[in-house]
Image (cartoon, rainbow, N blue to C red; front, side):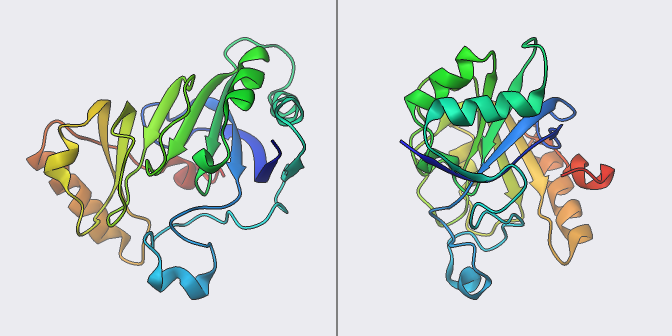
Amino acid sequence: MSYAVKEMFLTLQGEGVHAGRRAVFVRFAGCNLWTGREQDRASAVCQFCDTDFVGVDGEGGGRFADAATLADAAAGFWGAGQALRYVILTGGEPMLQIDAALIDALHARGFEIGVESNGTIAAAPGIDWLCISPKAGSTVVQQSGNELKLVWPQPGSDVDAMQDWAFDHFLIQPMDCADGVAARDAAIAFVMDRPQWRLTLQTHKTLGLR
């Protein structure tokens, strides 16, 4: 299988439980909840995405012929030494492309594998850290994992049902939107009302990282 990657780069994870951790980001092209084209945003299931995942023209992006080639590229971004290697497979929607061959190839190069998914496609076996970020209006089939990260506010989200899902961590992240202060305040109020959840922020944006 070949893989379409929008971009790949070395940075610090900015969100969630692993915030601040050095990681290679592999951003796959394509998503099943929005085309990525602005003219389609208003009719998309996910209308608030702040990421460019269209095409393969970003830094480190391209079409990779097989899993070994993509895993080698990720290892190149990490640099020398295999200790504590961490790769985050994101998108778009990475589960459109992640398969057993890629997971095996990344593990063979010493990577712990994190995945950030919208949960509408069942996760492939072998992922080490699974973060699901559900989108209101979609059908979430992957209701277990390590981290549930709900961007807030999202009218129509069935929060009561989510609290029964099998995750180790429940996180609320303020939406990056025109009224960011209101989104932040709404997220804080959410956590104050529901102590099962914790607040997470997009620290990479504060730090000027990608």
